[in-house]
Image 1 (cartoon, rainbow, N blue to C red):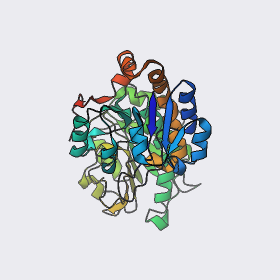
Image 2: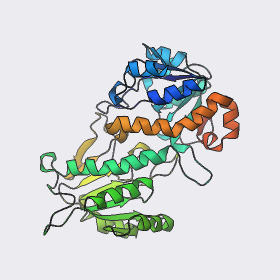
Image 3: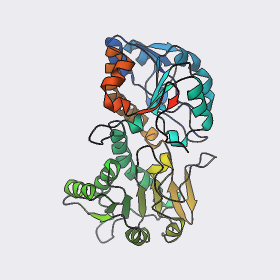
Length: 362
């Protein structure tokens, strides 16, 4: 099996992509099982992996994006190919990555159909019990990262309320509202509570709230049902609102309206991690200029569709360790046989040989 790892292209102007589709460690392991790995020069540089690291692992470093694509049977990406990459995709190729087809250009869908490409979306690979094996570690990272982002944006020089998340003796901590009690929301809740913030987590699924209550016993975490009444009440005094709503393959529902945002306090912060799939806050958007931090009604918004790129080395290691078991099976048994045997991988098919199988389109 031949894998290609091209250097990622920034999805939007001003929003860089530092992650890479496979670490040198992952390349080395695949090569030990008989695979060939071609890596575009400097593909891992921004994540702290040099060309020499890949060569030492046994991979072949190539010096054009075209070669990384053309030599590969399977292309390993972080994000779906960008417009300038369409020309390099070859007939019958397999492309794996966070595809998010719902937000893709129609031109990309046409390219996939014309070239009979098979698309595997990491974000919709799913186990029989409903767990998303590739999404979970990224949600965990994003949840923990949210504290770093919120703390920075709340600082006075960034236009924030100038408050400390955990407060100090005699001065209350920040109030944090988290929409969604899944993996991201749970990790965000534990991390915010860990620094002393007062946390509220809202969800519509009772089991999630029960699970979160168990994981945060003894912490300042309150669980509530995500009704409109509760959301309207909490946004008025929240210093930080975290959007962590995920409906696999579909657009995120709008839970915080423009009118609700108008009731928030000056200098408060919204971090919408659902932005990859449209966002759960009505004022959240991906700016054409690539400015992912902006202000609406004096409320600071953070809407970066690839937020874990800020911790690119950790994210690349996490991605590699998550997808490696599937890549190992593909190397040993071939792609088609693995697809037949492994339901998790087959659940990740957006398109098979050019035919779209999941209608998650705009």
